[in-house]
Length: 197
Length: 197
RNA sequence: AGACACCACAUCCG
DNA sequence: CGGATGTGGTGTCT
Image 1 (cartoon, each protein chain N blue to C red):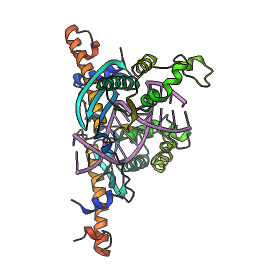
Image 2 (image 1 turned 90 degrees about the vertical axis):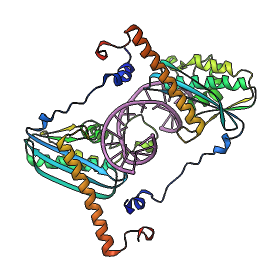
Image 3 (image 1 turned 135 degrees about the horizontal axis):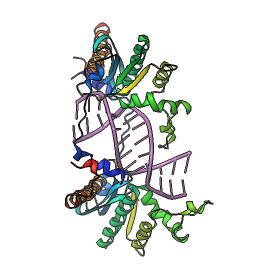
Image 4 (image 1 turned 60 degrees about the vertical axis):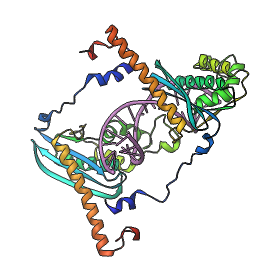
């Protein structure tokens, strides 16, 4: 029974992704998300905290020049910090497998490797770990913590907390943009001539 | 939309990869490619023949259980055979350095060595040449031939013939898969129980 | 140590 | 349909 059979026959299976909404209705849950428009470009992150299904806190922010994954990591980091402040068992949800697997699995290997990618992958130029400072910050935030569980949830799947975090990350972008407009209005100096009137 | 997008998306660097398309617009060119999805797994090969920039022939095929490099070699072999049939100077292009260097350089050493890998390999197990039958077939196809030049071209670089050969190799995979589906419908025996009904 | 190719996953965006 | 941001792997040779 070759592996690829499972791989190839998947389309026929019509696998449906079932969302266990009930799983979010009890206890403490933090949802983190990031966005970037375009990618790369101005980006934002958002965090929403839920207790027993009701939002009890939220936060957001942004960066003028960033990437989707940097914002995703920043959101997760802020989510972890928010979760730590609760001093109770919390689940932190994020729809980026890059962020979730990185925090749960890959991080340890990178750390052991001096924060480098150890894989048998391409040239040594690609050996450098991207966004290393953010990974190190996440690693530090997670040091000695055992009441936080980071889990992956599917994006755009109707999960309320995820949609809310997405909304907040868009708010983060809007905030960044607005600060540009303000700066532009004040100084008239941000945009290059070709983009003005 | 927003002006800052344009402002942001184009940093100063902007290195462009230049392809000498003109090189393919004159004379006889054969493009060979292979694919494997996943690797290892079901694979396909594709060959496209061009005269003065227009496609005059194509071929494709596949294998149920193979590797990317086996398909790459099979594609090259079929390409060489197609080139021989033209009985004129032909350039055969392939994006696999494994296939191109193997056919142009390494092949002679291996042959001299009784189709074994030479070098300082103490372990006789490491002297086993993989895909030896394919290399021997290529060697036989190239015997006494002097009107065929095998060259490497970069993959996924917008080279029309290479993209076409890639498409054909995917067709090769599809054909293989389809034959499985047919077999499944006929015998009801291909899929494991968990994927049926 | 190097090179090329093949693949998988998720997200972001147009 | 397209691209970018990022990770993980295998196939093969020198």
